Amino acid sequence: MNRNTTLYAVSLVLLSGSCKNATTEKQTEATITKETPAVVFENKGHELVYNMVEKVGDYQKLRVKKDVIYTYTYKTPDNKIDISTEKYIFDGELSYGRYKRHERTLPELEGIMEQGYDGTKYWIKVDGTEILDEAAIKRVKFTRPTNFYWFAMFQKLGDPGVNYEYLGHKKIRDTGFDIVKISFDSENGRPTDIYQLYINTETGLVDQFLFTVADFGVIETPLLMQIEYEQIDGFLIPTKRKYKKSTWDANVSDAPWTQVNWTDIRFDNNLKKEDFVK
Image (tube, rainbow, N blue to C red):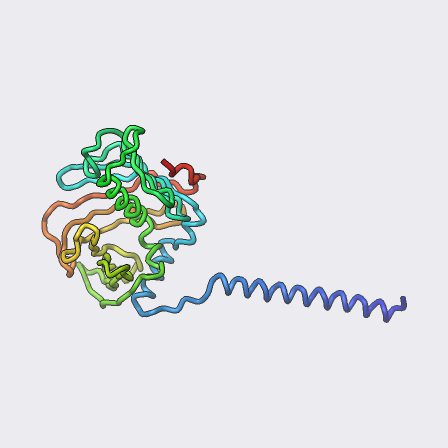
């Protein structure tokens, strides 16, 4: 092989490698673009909520963590207390709670209460014995998804079927807020919950929000939830909460608050689906 032939062959190899690299780079760029499409905001409310979720940590970040275990403490104004160990798997929204105290949730069932949702079925046990009472199971069907939703609420505000409406700006005690109404597509015409988020204009975080509980008939008169955040494992988590009845202008009475705290939060515990089966 003469010198010119050799140079030609080398040129072909380099050109081929360059083309392959260029093709690979284009494929990688296309893959990234496909995986992270540009967000098209429906309105200002949608944009505010999206930016808030990016600050606290979105649902994809939760999926990476796979699961969570934490202690849930709920105290009513009349001193009824629930204390449960909560476990969730984010993919499939599996939910489990083990109550060592349940003075508010099914207090008539004495003993250690376990509730679960395994992705298909809801179940309840007390001291290891399965409870088949329909009223008790109905309460589990409310409590399991509700507890999961409260934990992942901000992340789930990006789900399909969520509607956003910007209601304007308001100042409360020298703090400015953008108010965004959240509603949900209805199934079979059933009433759905309504939220009004008060997004702090300085931090971009939700300091408080109004909400209804359609399943319990709390529709006309909302509740006001105030929250405090804690930095945990790359997330801003609203671990301290309190709520009571309010008006749609976020005015509350001097009545005592219901207190809700999340403590001992641990992600990525290698939970299995079998852990949620009765």
